[in-house]
Structure formats: C-alpha cells, structure tokens
Length: 182
Image (cartoon, rainbow, N blue to C red; front, side, top):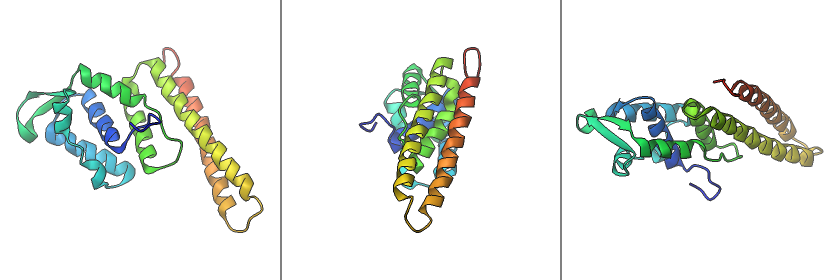
C-alpha cells in the first residue's frame, strides 16, 4: 500500500483476484480472463497493471489448488486470502479522481457484499468522505478562478454537480445498508 493506506495498482489486481475467488472457485485460466476483462472495462487495457501473477497468490498462501494443474487448475481462496481480501476491501481511497481510484471504487462495489453490514456502511461513508474532500478542492479552485477568462469555471461547475449528485446517491445507498439491510 501507499503511505496513505491506499491501494497500489498491483494491490487492486490482487483485490480483484481474491474477490473473484471469494465468489467461488475458478479455473486458473478463467480467473485470469475474468480479472483482465473487469480491469480493462473499468480503466482500459493496461499491460503494466495486468502483469500481476496469480502464481504469487498461491506462493503467498492466499489461494490453493483444489484440482487440476496449470491453466486447468481449479483455485479457491483460503482463510489467509479472506483476511487479505478484507484488508484490501477496507483500504482508503485517494481523493483525486484518477483511473486507479475509479478502479478501486468499482472493486469496492463489486465485492462490498462480502463484508459484514457495519463494514459495508463504513466503506460507503469512506467514499462519501473522499467525494467531500474532492468537492472542497474543486470549490476552492472554482472560487479562485471565478473572474478568469475561458471555460474552466463551466467545467468545474459540471464536476461539482457530479460530485454533489454522487454524494447524495452514496448517502441514500448507505441508508439502505443499515442494520438488517443489504
């Protein structure tokens, strides 16, 4: 993890792999295809991120083979892998709007149901806090640029409206995750 306890690109891939296996055992080759498909649909094809090896998860004792060999081996997550998955799922999210942040948020939503109800709500609140910080930053920039020529203010107004909408949606979503929900 980065110093601010946010996920690195490799840890994002790890989250995707462990989360996918938490949904059920997969053949090695199917897992690789599923990871590549999800990641590339969120942030586009990214060879430097995709190089993370499933073999490393086996070597670290986070997944195990239950049958077969090579690409046909069927893998499943074990208890150490589940602990690592939880740690990755509850990691911080960077407030800057980057492709990696978009991927981490998508992965959190993909696997949010794997957390206990209280942790689900905590993660949505974390996302609301991230949006609030981003909103504050953009509002500050908007106020600073108010008298300048050009179209930056219009662009910032658009982004501010999107963030306000996202915060509202996340708040409603979090309410639905309360005790006995989700």
